[in-house]
Length: 509
Image (cartoon, rainbow, N blue to C red; front, side, top):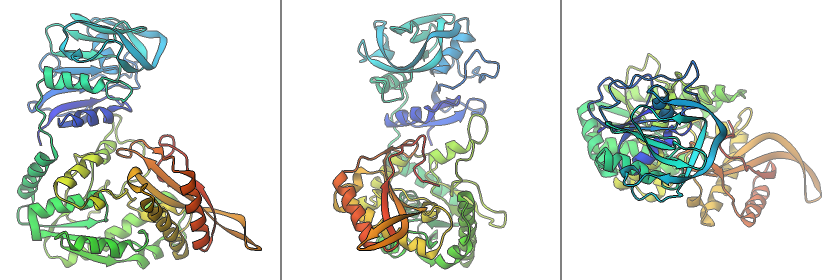
């Protein structure tokens, strides 16, 4: 993989957004913690320093070794990075008299500066810092100001080093993408050669070299990531790829049969294993979300191990791990706090003597879909909403029983089909239903009922890192609510979740 751009992470909530904007320019980039980046930088064409929640004036401020970077290769310092260069290079950083958060406008732009090519005066930028640069570093040249921030942007004379005290990566910075393009393409001359076609060609060759004539086993889920990984590997190693699709009893209604049917026409070697009863038996009486996830992970590995042993001489296990999973497992301050365990990250037990291959580990979700399109995968499959690895177990709050699974499958089927019938499915990034551990009083006919409550959830997002709830039409929600209550025995109340991420997560468990 061509490295091209190195992003050093100082713990900013926006670091992944920087990577996404760079990728949108067809430039490959990688994120590394500021204190643990590659020793060999020869393949990189430019470096970007991210923002940070820290102050450069604090004793525990992140303090990177830039001796192999500064003055030797093009460098863009964003927010904390800009303050860091100033503070430790002859400038002055002090607490700001005005907390500089939110929208601001460029009131001054120095003439004939390539960094601001095609950027208009008064362009809106996004500030997020409580310190400010009072004095530029040695050889610093002021490039831009806002009403409240005199040194909003600067460069260092004699170096290809640029620094800005705002965030070009967020959508609120109107010309942020243009500035990134000016720096990376016009100043650093980084090639724009990271395309789906180039990725497919390169990863197929990489997989051929790594795997050779050995056998690979892959657990298919029916989702986008595992499907694209399977098709890529199939192109690389053909008949040596063995796909296993396990029914854990927690899939959507009729999904086991439907997905197997869908894979038939794709030329993949797929075996379906119906282990639903085994999973539900192991989950009986368990209510804790993490325990449910770990139980499902353990049983899946046991089932998968049993099946993989049937295939002789398997050397590799393929997974559909994508880049956000990789980034989150290696944070600036060590592994990030566990919000919930991920089914693709965490390794294998010692008794499974298989090497891991992850052909998609450097891609974001939307990039996986673009690669899938390049591979000719059916648009309907690529457009499928994400579905959690633990399945409906984390959409059934509390303990799990076959009866509860049946109820939720029926509710979910009505909701998802309704979205499709009303032309709303493709406008939603992810949707599903949640069975709550709550009974409510209702009236059906002349009888009092005391039955389950279900919550419907629909969000819009790009990659699941942040998400907003979707404003589904009231008429649609009314129709779906009526249909669920009338057709699904055991449910007498439907609610709609209007929480965004953050502070909520997309799934309830």
